[in-house]
Amino acid sequence: MKAEVGGMEPLDLRTAVVRLAADGRVVHANTAAQHLLLGASPEGALIEDLLGRAEKLGKIASGTAGQIVRALASGNADATECFKLLDGSSILMVAGPVAGGTLVEWSDITPYVEAMRAQERDPLTGLLARPAMLREIAAMVQSGEPAALLYIGLDRFTSVNNMLGHMAGDKLLQKVSGRIVGLVPADAVMARVGGDEFAVLLRADSEAATAMAGRLLEMVARPFLIDGQSAHVGTSIGLAHLDPADPPENQLRNARLALLKAKADGGDAIQVFTDAMREELEQARLLEIDLRQALVLREFSLAYQPQYEIDGRRLIGFEALLRWHHPKRGPVSPAHFIPLAEELGLIVPIGEWVIRAACKAAAEWPLPLSISVNISPLQFRSPNIVAIVTSALKNSGLDPSRLELEVTEGALLLDSEPVMNIFRQLKALGLRFAMDDFGTGYSSLSYLQQFPFDKIKIDQSFVRNLPASPDGIAIVRAVSALGSSLGLSIIAEGVETEEQLASIRQNGCKQVQGYLTGRPLAPDMAEALIASAATAGEGKAS
Ligand code: C2E
Ligand code: CA
Ligand code: CA
Image (cartoon, rainbow, N blue to C red; front, side, top):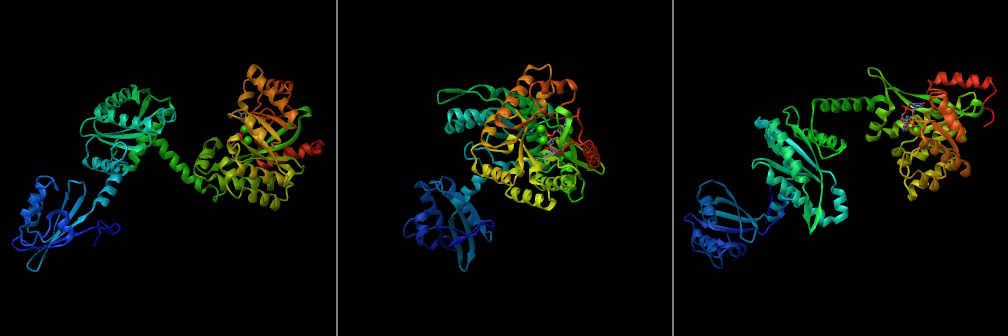
């Protein structure tokens, strides 16, 4: 016998069937029914007596027999009732009229009930799970009462988890949830909405919600005792007042965004979701829509920033820098839209356009100068990067030795055979690699050891404070020495003053790129610069 519940897959249940006469006496009971509640050979006995006996025998909780009998006697054409056996099983009863009496079916729906419960509750803390929380938020919004959502995140959970182990981590989460439950009012709804994230839905005005957030922050900050050890985690809380205009997902997202802001500001803090944050979200959403169309609408272009040999100020090449000119917004800074393009995965097609456009432009320059193209981490790991570069070189006719790819250490992975392979395949095409933003990562040197770079770009941050900064000088000197011993070229970025230029030169750096020697130029300006370099007889030897 199979029962279909709420459109789910039919469950295989051990269904008990009982046929009753109009006076409530058992006409027939199958073995499952006898086993479940009625006992052997129940025919002829009154159902209420049999159930009463089952209750006395401890098969069902006291009161359950009455509940079943009332449902059967209710006279409803189809009576359904759920009850539990004392062994924990959940039984669904369906009873309907048949000729001369009633047919009763009892089905064990325990697996179904457990599956439902698993969706509703977080097994570790017993708190509601996310979908249930979303329903609660929807109901609260409907009720129209002022309410707030607190999104609670633990600040140092991962380190506690790593130090004390996962079991201890689980206990800690249980204890945190226990403290929160102990503090919030009885009608608050609590959920575990992430690994170390909890949400509390409060019926409260802004003042009460802020006060509650403050108390929670203080309570969770107190040390926990776990397996005899003291553990300390901080908390940050994002607070969002429910806004009837927002769907439940967004309410939760708003509160979480406020939490992330609180964490970014250093943690152990409460941050309220503000109109300014909402505006920022809206702007990001609009920017995303525009960015998705920018490629097809041909709103991108490249600017070319010249690079020079310091001695003799000989032009050696250009870095291609992406520009987005939006018809209404005007120029949008790459520092603004490239991170978004990376987040959305759009950097892969946009980056492909950059590679092709840069190769094509450089192939038409009157001098065989080098062209540097920035490759973002996501692009570097996309499977067809080698094919794209190969085809860009072939279509443009650019000599591969003129192409230089700029990658940051973030694009690479140490000890990763697949990444190493891509690097090797690209180098085998005959192009060169420059390590961008050198010194800003954690292990620039290790990357240099593993990957055969041709050039190092000293990051602007080291150049900015020259010639005064001893650190800056030390870096330029060390990197230049490293470069000459490894046979790599060294270029300093972001050089803006003659003093900075003199300083990098003094400390061994031979190439320069910066506002002092040339800002990024529109294509025709770059071509004009190359043409004048050509007449001056430069750029022939490289
Ligand atoms: P980056 O690769 O470090 O590029 C150098 C940035 O420094 C450029 O900013 C350039 O205009 C700026 N700059 C050059 N000289 C000076 C100077 O003397 N002083 C100062 N203050 N700045 C200088 P831009 O064009 O705004 O690009 C910013 C970043 O956006 C780039 O940093 C790069 O990471 C990224 N980017 C630009 N174009 C592309 C691209 O086509 N693909 C990818 N993946 N990223 C790109
Ligand atoms: Ca660069
Ligand atoms: Ca750079």
